[in-house]
Length: 147
Ligand SMILES: [Ca+2]
Ligand SMILES: [Ca+2]
Image 1 (cartoon, rainbow, N blue to C red):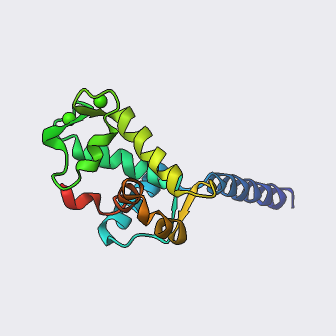
Image 2: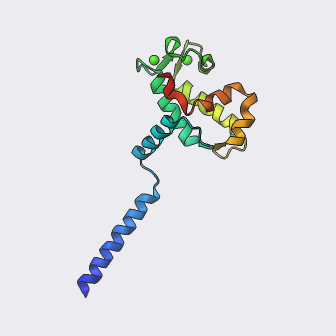
Image 3: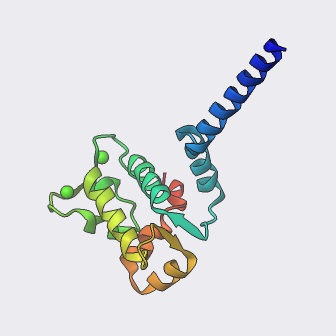
């Protein structure tokens, strides 16, 4: 009887730990897998979170920075997206990782009209008259095409 109770407590403990771990949200690996799946499908989600956008932009920077020197120089810019060159705030003709992520998140925040940390389809639609911002958001998904 005591053993059964002990085993029961053990099981309850394991379940509780499992729930606690699950409560922490998806692991980095799971997020990465989800991002890969999203990138492969080329279907923009109806809602983009700032966190998802930020990690997608980090991956986009890594993809563009072909020589991995932490800068996107003129030869690494995607040819049809000269808008990215506007992120070069210190005008040294290259976009640092910080210039890139701050610039992209700045665009995200402009599109995120109600500042709730997500961009809905409506907000994306409303940003159409803001070419910089809408281009940045539209690039969340298909960045792999430019590799
Ligand atoms: Ca580079
Ligand atoms: Ca720069």
